[in-house]
Image (cartoon, rainbow, N blue to C red; front, side, top):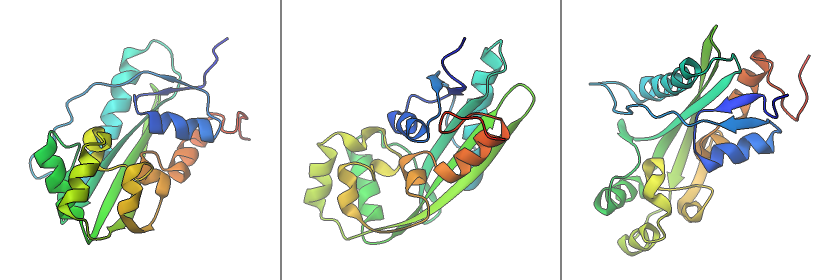
Length: 197
């Protein structure tokens, strides 16, 4: 008998931690796809497309029909998509752009199997205090920003930059619990280790 009820199409330790938090037994099988935004693609369309494509990639590679969950997170500042910084210069530029203002964190969650795949979107407004160039550089050297959308981690050292948040904290981390639990129940995936209904 399998010791899991869900496939997580992500290598993100944050997403794994959130699934553990709500008692979902899962197996990790990361999806590797092209994550390049399409020409003039909106951030909302982009994150939803990424989440769906990641889920569909893993669903298509499996012979069973165990539900697959995937997610994609992006930071949006003045209509510009901020993915993971490619280098120090890009990371510093992202933090400078986020300094002293509001930005949006969008996370799309997809859950599906060979019959259907559904997606939900979480949008959270985050405000940063004013950041100095010195602290941005010091933060970069912690190496935390390297694999984070927008170049920061709200659950880590980057939390000191946050002045306020309106929306889903777990969505900023990378997996919005509200939308995720709703989708899991639709696919009869147990949360708290118990099947619903």
